[in-house]
Image (tube, rainbow, N blue to C red; front, top):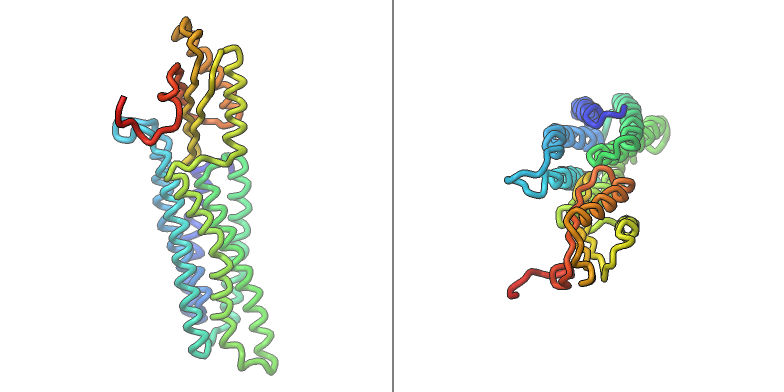
Length: 308
């Protein structure tokens, strides 16, 4: 499955299906961890519907309303997804602790095993398909869904192992401890799954705040830019790069020596094309603005001009 939209639709439908299944089986089994899984998927289904709408918006070019394009919507929806997963995990964790202090919670293990088996199989299948899709299209939205289903599969698989263990323990002398298995498992799964939404939310918020990508990414791009400017007498280049979504935005100030005052617009455009050609080999698509100046103050970092 290579299409970004097809991958997101698959994730949306699977979330709804597992969510309804989870809530239904949580009523049958009285299991908090199954309810967590169901609510988790229903919540993600809601954001997935928004994601499909965002998919069309982020591909629009910049306009008068959004002069820097719509790429920031991608980071925004990923931040919402991360916060939602984090919120559900924290609520489930504290609810499980309350159940533990209230002498546990009895569950029906046989229906719970059926649910966990189905959820694990669906989760693993969707995770693998989304992973292959992301490797092809490199979509941040597909990556976020892939991370979500990774958490989902871990939860379902852990639940399956625990409920199978519960079923075996029902035929032993440890039956008095069975009531604690579900809340303990809920607390454990919730605490272990917190890492992924925290990273997802952090990366999305950093994108919204215009934090630069990794040093390796920016260094590779700067090397390509300097290579493209070979032959031009320059003092320094200032490269500013942000990537809130799938499309990086790069602002380049080229500080040139005064002896280059004979340069024409056409010759400078040739350098712009060389820079773009090299950058496209690293990031495709990409938005680049290249400014040539002989004045240091127009190129160096600033917090804003207050006087000439």
